[in-house]
Length: 444
Image (tube, rainbow, N blue to C red; front, side):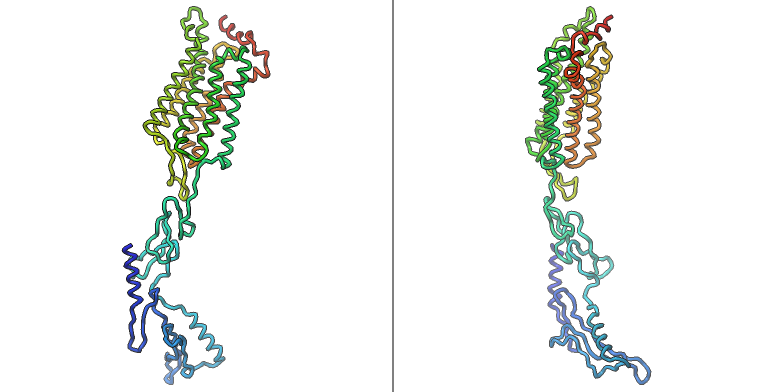
């Protein structure tokens, strides 16, 4: 501001300067600091001695008080041979198109730029430099550029600030509406399978695979699909606070059910051996305790996260210039990765136990399908880590939703598609005799 004031004061001082020359001519500066154009018109004439002389025959003076800017004394002009009128017209055109000298050695800086003094040259010499990113200049010959407010961004000409565009995964977007529709439709599939299991609960294949745990698993998978909806829409404090917690608890319940089913498969086989002390561990209450304990640990992690460092909505101004990304700040990356890592831990334990039990003698050994489901689950979330780090803005949220949907579908297909196939299309395999063939071969 001091530099600008000094410049304005100097300009006002120059505008008040009037100097009277010895020939009676008055010199002054206009409002731009320029000297009015004053030029003599000369005629080259060949003297009697054979020497070419410059004879003043007129003047061009923009400061003339009588209004006669252009004056020529035709009687003093010695015309060469030829058309005098064409020569005179050419002379007038040449004079009128002569560039008027200015008091500076540089052109005025346009809007969107600022003046920078050239080192080693007079102060009237400068170069025009475009305003840096996020700044504007709405005056010519501006010394400084002005920074736009946080919610505004320069237009392409950098002479005014315009509102920044906002970005978040909205339901109105094609991507957001597509993911929302997939989540809602997908949540119906496990509920439909649950209805089929309830209708066929007396059949051997439903009873042999822990009917209660299967129903609980189908309900939790449906919640996994629905938790994707919390990631879509304008980030609000309540949705930011609950979406990762809801996601973590829904998947913890699902993976805990699968872990309990895996352990119960091993216990059931081990208990069939004569004199085995594991028979008491095959009771349904044991599977409920496993599910409750594993889910409770995840619940504690989420409670500590919310209490110590709750997530909140924020405006991200740094990721993409000119765009305000409205997103949920997890506040504690450690808490987020602990929650996600715990899911990976449960899935890894389930995978290891199911992999060991995959060759147990049984015509319908559920451990095989658990192995495939946990392998797919782990593959999806391991791939999510680099994908989420490379995505930006709303696409980071979309990547997590994709991971939720794909991993949930992996659980549905691997765990329940074979059972639904037998129930609906191979009722001959849904018999006690068929299910006990493998067990009887294992005992003999």
